[in-house]
Length: 216
Image: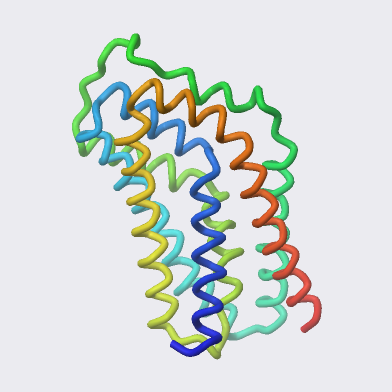
């Protein structure tokens, strides 16, 4: 990879990882599954969510990419939309109040254990990930940086595999770490400040994407 490719990879990988750090619906689903079903079966949730993410990433690389290649106007419009969505996520994170994070402390070991197979947890995770259109818009925002004629398909596929792997590894880590009540409660207090940092960085990236699109 040349210097430009390294810069693109670092930008996309950083934004994606910061987004993973921000607690959302999938995060709550993962924590509750880990508490009720144990870490082994709950990895199905992680696999399902990462598979849904992989599908959206593939759509961005193949489907959206072919459209962008045929129209500069569409490329610019989608870049603006993707950048604005990242800014929207940033505003939501920056406006969130501390009480909004209390849900992270709801699940505990006092709940009755639920027997669920790995396959059932996989289905739950996949449905959760695929039913959230924000995932597609988020990846579209990120891939708007690399969906150009100057960037080859192998590099885009590499980015897709990287992000899919990171989603699974991060979710699996959450399952094993946050299954303990004590750790989860401490994270709930820390998540508020982490979300602020994440929002600020995503906002800057979003503004950069919009400015670059308008400049063209």
